Image 1 (cartoon, rainbow, N blue to C red):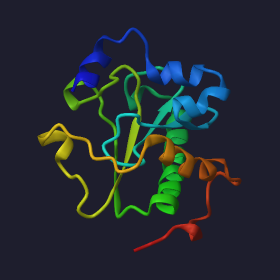
Image 2: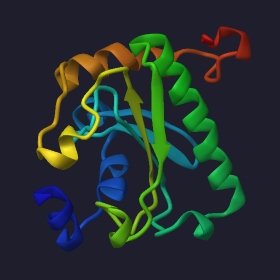
Image 3: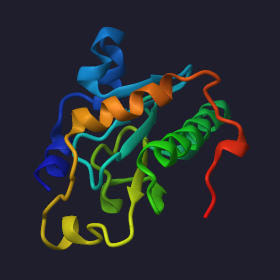
Amino acid sequence: MNYIKSADTAPSCIFCDKPGMSRSRDKESYIFHRGQRAFVMMNIYPYANGHLLIAPYLHLPSLEDLPAIVSHDLMDLTRHSLAVLRATLAPDGFNVGMNLGHAAGAGVKSHVHLHIVPRWKGDSNFMPILAETLVVPEHLNTTYNKLLPYFRRKPFMPSPKTRKTS
């Protein structure tokens, strides 16, 4: 909650500041991929291991404000990120979504972004909400190093045949 409350008064925007840094600082910023119109980074306050954030470079508050081509890029990066997480962390499912506006829980309400939270059977469930406790079994740097090679693979989007199904 301290992070969410402080984000409302923050003088800058992490989704503008982090990609504005030199590419040589991507590891420090936990940025995995810089696309033409959007980028993928790791959440440093994760709800679960591998919690990713996907944001456009445009500083706009809501999905409907984005040009169609930018929202398409967000979805392409989401698809790729899901494939990366399936291949590396093998979660049982995902929470994918956006918190639009303060009342919806947006920590950075002025810059639209998408969350991908990997989920496992029997994971933390409501621990972050009820106990104000985060359960993350792996250090952020370890997770970053595990995922990064998959974001650097070419072609960027895997073929549908590489997707594991249950």
